[in-house]
Length: 173
Ligand SMILES: [Fe+2]
Image (cartoon, rainbow, N blue to C red):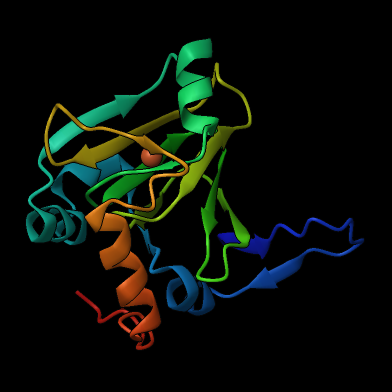
């Protein structure tokens, strides 16, 4: 079962776990579970890719130090970033609407969709064993480091967050 919790600046003895509904409501981040033995044919994943027109499949494996640094640096993208874990363990940190970090622990079969304009970073537990795949809009996929708050995709995302666009649960596909 996927776990998500608030990364408090203060040291607390017990993590404050949040539900996936709370994750979505405060960040717009979507979570799905995918059968990785047949993910290429998964109708839910295909639907998510079609909805966003994200048809460029980008493997994440054999990560070198430069890759790790790029992933761990806080950034956002213009478009939604669906990412599926195939092997190993990773942690996605996303900023919620209050600018607090939420950490999401991901194992094989976990798929997150990070909305365009949402600041995030990604850390793998072991770079030698981690494998994943991203579904991107195109090859020229850019990361915009913090601060890039002047970009329209960021303003649009914040507007959606504060206008209640993520208040209702995700509709089943
Ligand atoms: Fe990213």
